[in-house]
Amino acid sequence: MRKIVAALFVLVVATASLAVLTGAAAAQTSARERLFVGFSNAPGAAERALVARYGGTVRFSFPQVNAFAIELASTKISALASEGGVRYVEQDPIRTPLGLADAELAPSLSNGLYGLITTHAADAQNAGYIGAGVKACVADTALATTHPDIAANFVAGHDAIDNDANPDVNDPSHPSVAETETHGTHISGTLLGVKNTVGVFGVAYGAQLYEARVLGTQPDGSVGGTTSQTMDGVQWLADQGCRVINLSLGGAARSRTEEELYNDLAAHNTLIVASSGNSGRNRVEYPGAYPVVLSVGAVDRYGAHASFSNTGRGLDISAPGVAILSSVPAGQGRDASVSIGATTYAAAAMEFSPTTSGVTGPLVDCGYGTSEADCGASPPAGFVALIKRGSPTHRAVYFPTKVASAMAAGASAAIVYNNVADSFSGTLTTEDNNGTPWIPAVSVSDADGATLLTHLGQMTTVANLAFAWDVFEGTSMATPHVSGVAALLLGKNASLTHSQLRSILTSTAHDLGATGYDATYGYGLVDATAALAATP
Image 1 (cartoon, helix red, strand yellow):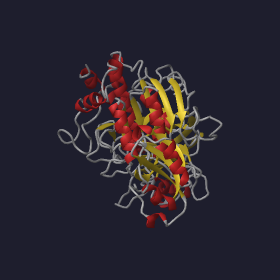
Image 2 (cartoon, one colour):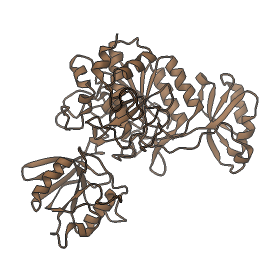
Image 3 (cartoon, one colour):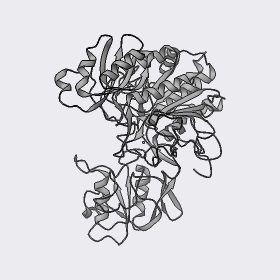
Image 4 (tube, rainbow, N blue to C red):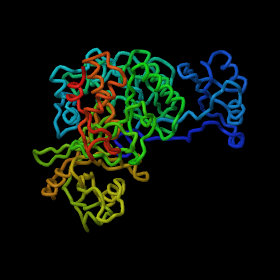
């Protein structure tokens, strides 16, 4: 999971919620399933023995909500559910991750740190509010704990996937995950990336980071985890004293057990901040959809709703989530650019685009890249294709099709420019083009695309270097902006209750869309200075 516009929350692989499975449904398969079982009382030795009697295994215990997370054969579920003292049996849903080396980037409206400006977090920092002494916490993928924008603020971690205390991407117990598990490092950088002399810095750069790995790399290469693993990580974070916990993850299925745990944490003044989802649907995903959780949607640098961001009555607040620059494990980010003569244009590498120190060729207009004919009858050898995003008709033309068309015409690199205001990130979807390696492919803004069109025929260089920072987008990227502002508030007043935090964040948000609350923006764009002003 990297810079995928429609999937960085990242979306949900979900199973249907199950209150009590019937015998007919259980008889369809004897496979072992991961489940929650809720009891009338706090489960102990007797309840463990009951699960064991049916051949089940207890994976996690949640005495706070009188529940176990278990593994059990499908054929045994109905019988266990009918036992005295068992309140319910339900599925344990899957959750998935909802996408500068020499000098520290200064935030501006034209770069990937614009969120610090539009949320007024930079103003709050200049006034001395940096989250000092606050434990700002993340439950996500493995973390690059030695990254220069992470190391100084990282305190401790927990791994609910491997059940140990090391969530680092380079932990030998989960080798080779630095490439797949970039998400947690990116989230943490936005939340509290260190303010030093390199890279980027986060909203609450003075806070302390506690991180739980709750999303792991699966055998098929995807990244995800069960709801119980997320809950285990969240509970561990709460036990460390975390008052704000960032969940840039989610799924379509509701869990009674999960909701009860988050209700319990709220009662103990821990604020859970979660992504709304990236499917563009009118439905907030879980856990963001639980009333007690603060759900976050995404907007761009202009405050416009991001098309991928889920909406719905459960949406609470919005934050920047389009083209957000932050930290990633070393070598997993991309530093992309387009150069003509002495002028260099900022670019974002397409996911799965190969790295290169520079590919040079004459610039050719390939229109919308619907076919190789769009590049002309006989384009020069090794040309660089300039392609417009979108389609001349209502039929969708996806990025892989555009780049494949340029490849067929003989292009050595491809530049896709936006058809609406602002920059964007894209994906080529697969590792290669039906067995043929992709040519380097990058994206640029609409404005830079218009300028490049005035330089057709000139020698153009496309670069895509391995890096420790990258641009991702999604509601995942919006969420830590809100968590960071919550940490700033706690830095001003550590005694704020859960309800006070929620109320201050939502009541001071900058209204967007229809006047007052609406299901597209919630209460509006989070505003750090207004929230701090309202904090006693």
